[in-house]
Image (cartoon, rainbow, N blue to C red; front, side):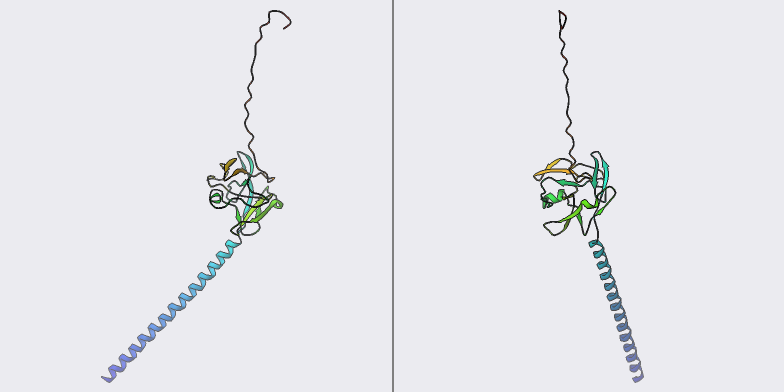
Length: 190
């Protein structure tokens, strides 16, 4: 009986030792996965922090306009002054500012010397072109659309931006009417 008790004691010790080593393995794996996840998240965060906005040119029904990296038209807001945005809150929901986490990149046809950034009220960097803060328009659902052109909203008009960094103002269509008068003359010379 004493021998049976000693065997069971060894078995219980072996069971405890096996359970202990499994716990150590699980904790080690969990710690390793946590470190890997932490490093991966840090890598993603630093990658996001280093993203730069790209501004390019695209042909639209308004002519050649500035666009973001997705081909969406970029607009300026006539209310902005001295390179500072006058659009925040609900305005920025309809007219999202073009943001960058560093120096913006000039695409084909865009003058890098005209690109810059301005600090917004929330601390983020908004891309500027020829000192105009740049925005997209939420109702431009597809690349190349210019639905925001000449809209009066939030206290001023919005215009697509040309390669020169100026507002593209659609020429007003004018209608010319001509009138013809007929004169009946009984005597020459009329």
